[in-house]
Length: 273
Ligand code: GLN
Image (cartoon, rainbow, N blue to C red; front, side, top):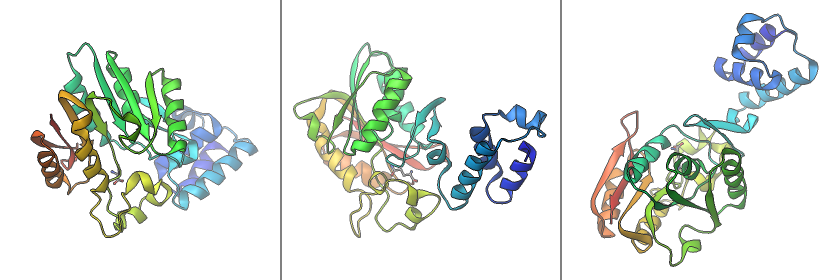
């Protein structure tokens, strides 16, 4: 079996980009190798790995879980089924956070529900003056996040617990979160690989609810953990902008706003204390 033949075989079963990336991961060859030397033989162990991945991908497993990593903002993060796979729309949360931190010599930041750690690690690396803490309820997620921070050289102070529970008495200049916000029973949860992702990271799992249970808890407790003038920023679903702004206003925040993602969809809301 050659590289070219392996690729042609896989393309009948899965998306062509996925086929190419899995072949590169399985064989260690580059895209350029595939184009320039498709006649290169694929050794049996590499082909066996490739064939296993192709079968699992065809059955719906996300590519990131097969190869154990995913890219976010130009950095490679390790992922496992304990954490959500990084989504490009979460870059909006980072950009808005960086705007708030710009020009500050130092700032205390916390990322609630850090998952793989993409938000905490990106902010720690891109804003050297900040002291970044991160919280997650899942021990498996915290292990992945710690590993990512270590590999990427980010200083993040990790805590296990439920939202603000491990942060009693502490105040921050910026609270960021990409919480679970998909409503329980949303058909989206059964599509596009989401069944393979941790349900606790995707949905508040409130039967018959609207997906806002975690956002409600975060917003309600945020003011007690912010310094004067501090900011709360969180990601949410396409139809949760107005409800998010209402929750912020009810909690005493000034001028709540919602920002769209690159697709023009309401994605991040926030406000200043
Ligand atoms: N945006 C993700 C999705 O709908 C969900 C992310 C999240 O729940 N925080 O696939």
